[in-house]
Length: 135
Image 1 (cartoon, one colour):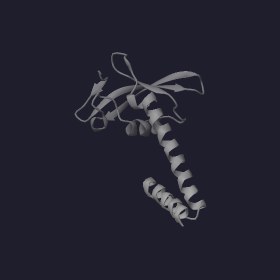
Image 2 (image 1 turned 90 degrees about the vertical axis):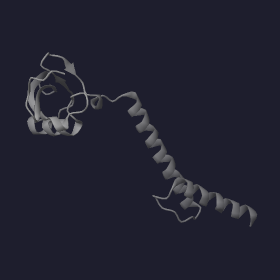
Image 3 (image 1 turned 45 degrees about the vertical axis):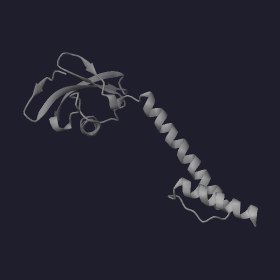
């Protein structure tokens, strides 16, 4: 990535923003500290979102970086890649299943709370059922 300008501590990059209010793209050059660049020379999510909030008076929904050679570079963290979406979906399904398990334990009279390990809740349910079968 070739920067527009570079100092000892910062680099100058252009950021192209989709201004949805006027249906046009706006380009603005911004300085980013070198300490906030990733291994590919692209600014991190934190500094980028901070600069976008400071610079634009509207919520930026889409943007892309542009270097001095007019190459457009989309940061990896800006893409909702398939793996991230799948992982997040699995996490949410796991949370729902855990909550249902805790609710099931409470319904049959077992004292549990959110925060117990899933295995612990399941063991308490199994022990309760085993105790009822052999009683």
